[in-house]
Length: 416
Image (cartoon, rainbow, N blue to C red):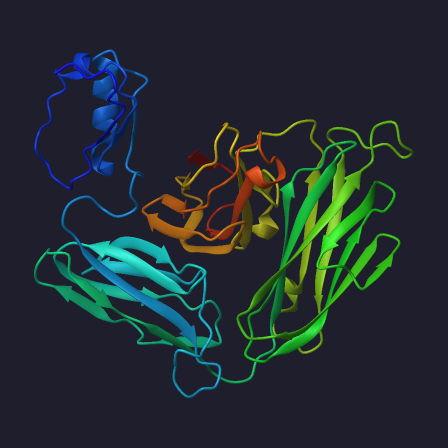
């Protein structure tokens, strides 16, 4: 039947039956098709072959599998009183949970900002392996196995409780460039500082920069001290495993200033979280960022904060990645999915950890593909609210120990 108003079809059903496309001429305005992830390539190729290359095929119309499946869900909490986890204990965001089916790795999910996770399975035995965010903590249960005898929308809840062992003082800091430096424009930076230890901490954060090449505009929260090329913030009662953020805006000198800043110039920053005395790993209390000034930038990109090439001394250490995205359309984006393929064999995929995001996110990892799902983000369009049309996600990942100096290769795409 000729249907010129049909624009969207949902074929995501978890099934395997063949679907014939000889009806496409009856739907000349079809633009969007939702399909199971394993069928996306098939439909995309066939729509093009039938003369419909503009039909967009995606599995992201929903964020759960099509058809019947089982669900494992739960919450991560930190036992701050060492008396067992209760509803009053704080939740833990961005905790990685690996899942195996017997001896086969099925992937990983990360807890959201509410500390909860959700993963989908078929019939079988599934072992869950939570990854502690700090070496001073262990999870209970350590490695539970969930069994599903049927595939009939079964739901099982498995919570995890994180408990500390011993007394440890350990702070860390990371600095990210969320809006690149351009001559004559504002650049934006985020400092993430965290308490990896077991004790409540108070201290200060310091940022060093070249005051001759830029002017400090503002920060959230506001700084408590400002000197030439130096900013300070104080913090109190940073509880174990808590992360806080500081956003800093700098105005970069134009080429006409003295001294000038030009495209290709380096800008150097050093962020430090104190106290250093008594810290068990003081090396990560300091983060250095060398940023290259650009003339323009793609608002949907991925950058390594350590640069495009790492030296021998960085092999085996964490590299810090920032993925930026922007809604450049003319209507708000209800959902955004950032799909990052880490196919480079030089990376240790098991080490990937989320640092922070601009909005609440659900993170899933299957093989070499990481998906950052911003469901319900309602990201404004650039034309309506340019500053709010941007978002980002930051993560860290180690390189393998058996490489020498290395050129970084990474691929990402965003779906709105």
